[in-house]
Image (cartoon, rainbow, N blue to C red; front, side, top):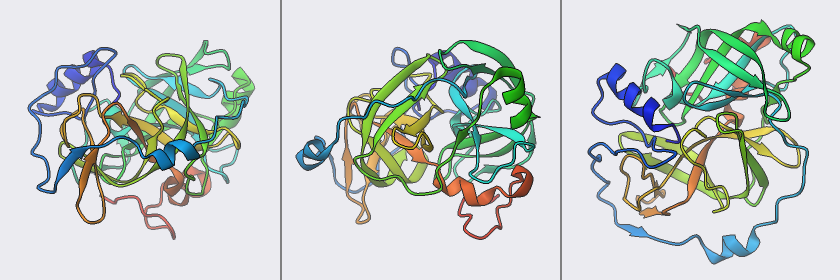
Length: 304
């Protein structure tokens, strides 16, 4: 995972875990004992020349830092659903492995956990203009995906009225290969521009497995602290994924070194390539008043 070293070590202490997701950076973190790799064949392979030739140059768009946030150890963004109301309590999106109480275990889903976590809200230039505070963890998991969604103590209208900053909107459709994107890190105040190279049937890292992950082209060489950054479609300005990990050392399926597993169980790795988790599937799970409803039609997020 793309979380700073000091935060990773802290998380290990508070959870008592012997292994944590890939969290190295800005220099590589000391990696705990790796989990066993799957029995399927493993090889280091370059990105396909077909993908490389098909990639479009990113269009120049007005994507900036407005609406992104810096956490104590990660990045994030103030988000809204396409049908969220201005009077709804605002939400912040980051990674599951950025949760302040420790990494959710495989199969664990956290809903409605009390939180008073603070976030530094950034303006378009990347300047911190306010401190926002959570009232609870609406949802967090590292199973199938890697997300934490906080509910804030302020509404979208209150944030916009006070600071002139609007939330980023989640796209409600699956991203498309070749799409020009930007990964916007509030922690580092740094933006990465690349394209969606493709999608991964299963992305495995240590004990965690994620479904239908986004693989970036090589230009998005994200580092520690970029965990939780919104991945923004240049053409629409909407959030299509949340940045979460990358293969640092060329190892296979270990902490800091996720591997790709296809539907037949074949394993490949792309050293130096980074990944994100799609966010369109979040949209059906939040209804009127931004209330989480995991039983809603179309909601496929893992349940507790």
